[in-house]
Amino acid sequence: MANYCHLSYEDRKNIEDGLNDNKSINQIAKEITRCHSTILREIDRNKTFSKPTNWNYGNIYENPNYNPHCPKLEKTPYVCNGCKSRSGCRKERYTYYARKADDTYKEVKSQARRGINLTPEEVYKINITLTPLIKKGQTINHLYINHPDILDFSKPSFYNYVNNGVFDFKPIDFPRIIKYKKRNNSNNRRSRKEREILIGRKYTDFTEFTSNNPDLNIIEMDTVCGLQDESDCFLTLLWRKSKFMLIFKLKNQTTDEVSRIFKIFQNLIPLDVYKNLFSIILTNNGHEFFDVNSIECIQDTGEYVTHLFFCDPHMSCQKGMIEKNHEFIRYILPKDSSFKNITQEDCNLLVNNINSLCRDSLNGKSPYEAMLFLCDESILKLLNCHYIKPDEVVLNDSLLKQ
Image 1 (tube, rainbow, N blue to C red):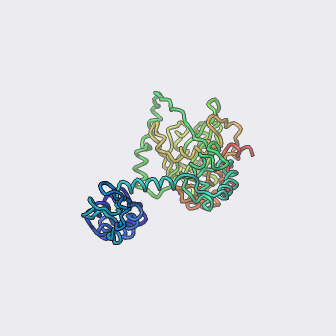
Image 2 (image 1 turned 120 degrees about the vertical axis):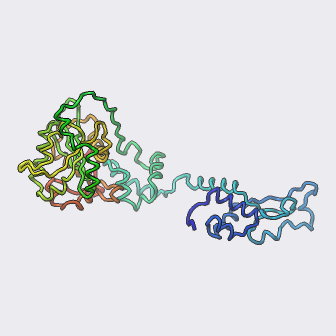
Image 3 (image 1 turned 45 degrees about the vertical axis):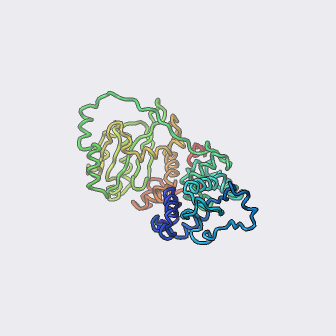
């Protein structure tokens, strides 16, 4: 049986055809795989009443011997669809029409979904609870995960209520949608040395290697730039399994600065843990990542521990997870913001709020909590990472002004 499903027009048409063919309710129910009581309720709810016409008979209701009630309607199926005397019958009739029944159903469903299905008390509670959190820049998913007691309706309904002005907060109060400029095509050819670096490290090599080693941790790596005339930028790393991200301030977008960050990792993290966490790195074709030895090897010993791969040119979608995560940075530091006065402490504060944001894709957990399945909390503390309580997460430009 198809339990708890609405009847379709095809179901109603089959009911009408079954009634016209004098099939029993049980026969109809079996044919459309519905419950016997469902068919009876559908017929009783949507049967159409019609009086007999007075043509050539005068007012038949004035005849004292006239009985308008048909005894056949007192027995199942309680409608006249299969009656042979239906065309010339002078009794009151009930008839089931699939088209009318379906139109009535659609109108009832439409009416039920209009308006606001919230009491004034519920609207007030949502306002006082969520308004300060939304002003911190928290996302809809984060709010739904941490406040299911008051957000017990669907997200589309929430969006409709916000757009219709039900709450004190407006659509403009939510994190803005990032719009990226169209990428300029570049005809600059790579040098011979750069082309040699890509041998064995292309995206096709990455997909082959990861398919043969599915249990290894994959990191997506990228840089985020501020103003065009400034050299300051961020180095970002994101673990795919946990969506946990790290952000490091670079003085300039060079191989030396990237090598410096990996030197810090290798000095802070025990070697066995480092090998596990930094198994595979996928990055773009930026020149700052072309000192492959400083990334793939332990810089003090030269031991090869990390497999480095590069995306295809102009294919940032191949590392789409970190590209999507960069949107959270832009909530706090919009496009064309200056990174010159941003310190590493600011980067730590920024990334700790991002890593504490609950995600639907992590079953309601935050990246910080998910990362604890990959390493011990003491390792995260070495990297100045800590957990922020859900209602204290801030994801707008007020974060770095506090």
